[in-house]
Image 1 (cartoon, helix red, strand yellow):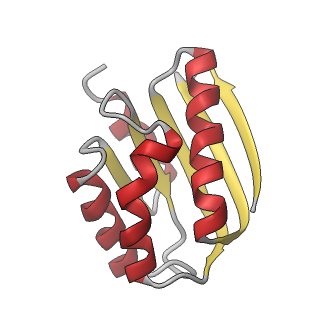
Image 2 (cartoon, helix red, strand yellow):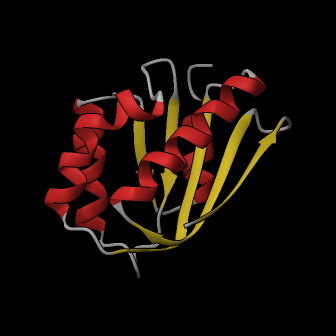
Length: 127
């Protein structure tokens, strides 16, 4: 998976754009890189764009990955994290499942969106 990570000061976010295949091996690395960059920029609002990604792992694998995600990436309760997905390539039921798993553990301030503007609006709430 290829990543582009940028701090967008005007929006108050760190934006990670991912392309390629999402799998167990690279999801931890991608998360870690995003969170480390956000620490460096002193920014707790993260926007992750996976609209150009493909997913090969099962829902069960994704569920099991979340058990280690907080420990291996640095995701904590202080972050607000919005993920943008493409419902044509990433099933909505899968997005809702992942959102539920992550909100239950490790981060209740995590949401998945199919619309960038809605994701940005949510990130700006309660600042």
